[in-house]
Each structure stands twice: as structure tokens, then as C-alpha cells.
Length: 88
Image (cartoon, rainbow, N blue to C red; front, side):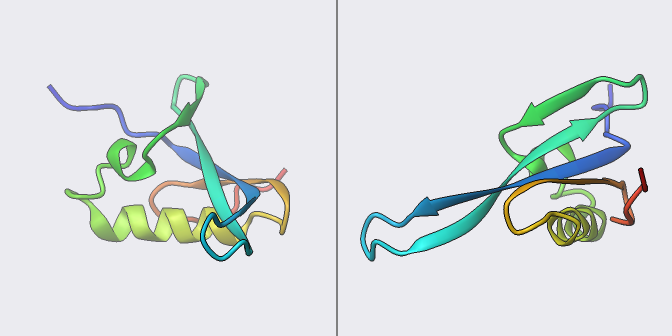
């Protein structure tokens, strides 16, 4: 039985303050879209994209989603496994 792999990924940029240095830093939250049209937020993008089995695909998709994301807010959808923006 194989796990379902999404067809697209979207990143959301979130700013937070570090506890120790009290500096702002940027991190990302991810949503995935499956072939049937479902969209779900995910805790671990690597787990959903099976990063241990397909590390190059997971890495290029993550980098593509982060690059398509504005400095603050919700980014564009990018395709899996290439990380190219899908357009609007």
C-alpha cells in the first residue's frame, strides 16, 4: 500500500521572534494539494513528500515553494516534483 503524494505545494511565510536572541526570523508553513482537489495543511512537508525516499524531489519542491512565497503572506502553488510555479 503506497501513500498518496501531492501534486502541488504552497508555502506561507510567517515571522516570529527567537526566544533567546529576541530577533525576528522567517519560517514557512506548507499546504499541499492532491490530485482529487483536496487541500490540506501539513505538519511535516518531508513526511508528506516522502523525503527519505525521494530526497531530490522533496528538496526541489520545498525550495520552489519557498522562492514563490512573498516576504510575508501566502505564496503561489508549485508543482511536485519540480517546484515550478503553476501560474494563476
